[in-house]
Length: 320
Image (cartoon, rainbow, N blue to C red; front, side, top):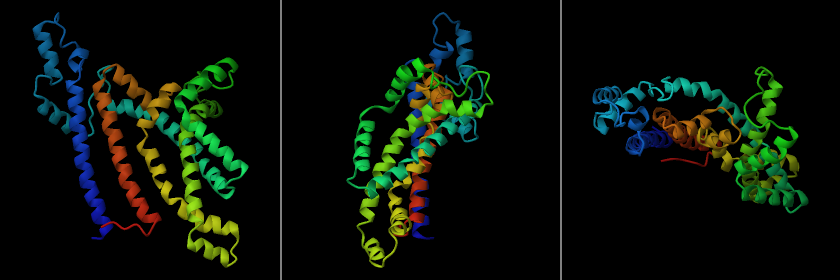
């Protein structure tokens, strides 16, 4: 077994243990938090008859010790069953699957818009010290100085609402569910605001990375051989400059839930991020637990993928 294979296997074992710890802590916090499941289903109501209270607690397994409750919950999760929502008694995974396409659509659009940071970073590096480079430095500083969700609210209040140029929320206009242009119109503002941070990060990191790479010996050698500057930039410098920003693309997948929470609520986007906030306010603990575990799994998986991709794009990286 190679060093990389041993490293990946070791990481898998470590992350399985980490995920187990996350499930234990999350379950304990949900069960011990004030206003827990008993409060929501009415099992702690002093006006409720003892027989009815006992039947409700038995139905939800609340009479069992917390370790037993955790084991029962975990055994169902390992079989792909996250239980049923307290709100409407629907299977949790069905509710998540129903909202997932909206979140995936927003995330893919966000990644696409964020990719515009690549040519901006390249141009800023090539034109270092020029007018464009200085303009982008000011723009990036201003963009990082305000919360992006707040900027989205300002645009909704002072531009979208008075002028009607942009929708105030949702995925589509009622009655135009199958109109692709209407959906793109609704997607424009949330995707742009959500991608602003990625756009700034990509352009800044890529600019710095290219400026560092073009100072290396092999770039000077390529230029000394009379190679075309465009070939030097794109074939040699750009490929190696991309290595430090590899995690950006992977963590976009890992942030499928966590990153969607803010922007889906800001723009009333009906995805799983908005559902997570609603479930937390409604104390719908099966939904909250499912989203917590799925988000943790995506993040841990993303970390492993980053390590694997690094070995593919940079042969100098070796694991032991």
